[in-house]
Length: 133
Image (cartoon, rainbow, N blue to C red):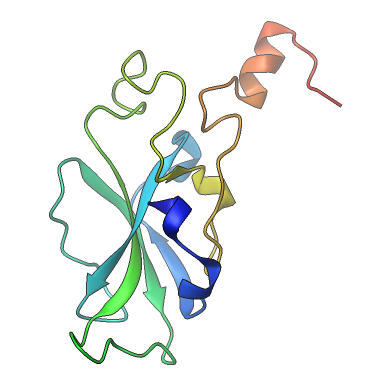
């Protein structure tokens, strides 16, 4: 869960790779997965789809016990808002979800009004609603 990801667990991230256009996504789920390599596309074993992942720099050390690296993977489930806009997450988001526009290597990101299901800036303009000051 993103709430359980600490910034110090992300210090070796060098880049984020997106498999989809994140500008169309209100949120993505993120998790720290144990993976065999620092770089490259990881295998994906969840329902739904992987939308991105982190790459680690050469300073990242593997776990002494397992030899794996902890890397972030970004994903969505079939019942998430992008495919079920009127469904379970029409408003609100899962605990591990963040707005993908707030993500960067080494930064865990955050929830925003958009990710929580509020109106996007373009939607407020279309409806003639003035943005808050």
